[in-house]
Image (cartoon, rainbow, N blue to C red):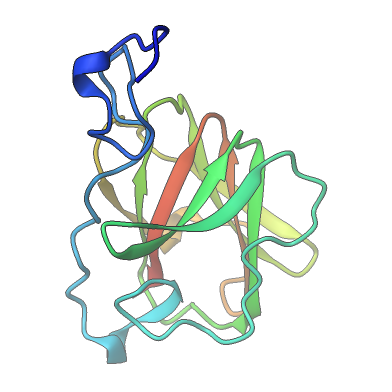
Length: 173
């Protein structure tokens, strides 16, 4: 603690120290573990499933986002600070046999989060998420909302928005 500490009674209670607004800077818990059988899932990023091999979680697309893999509550997550856009690249995958894209997110300051699937062309369209702050949110997006990309040739996923966004359990089922 120093003389400039705005919340000395809270010092050391969070990894990031004091936050005078009262919101957590990072999650102190992990998202709820997925329950879908692994045989029914194509995982992009999750501790619960085997992910597609050779995935690139920080491709050099000229983004301003600071992308890192962090560990919170014993769980690896993707953390996007200063999100403008951030991609994930993986092997070309036919996801046309799945019905949903699942992801968990956590933020305290984002006002918008969009998720795009991308196929060759590039062909993509974004789906806007309803942003809730301060707790893990589980989202299931119907793949029918992705009308532009060819779902039999998807090889990238892109998140765009603002603030700091933490993602986990990204998979098709």
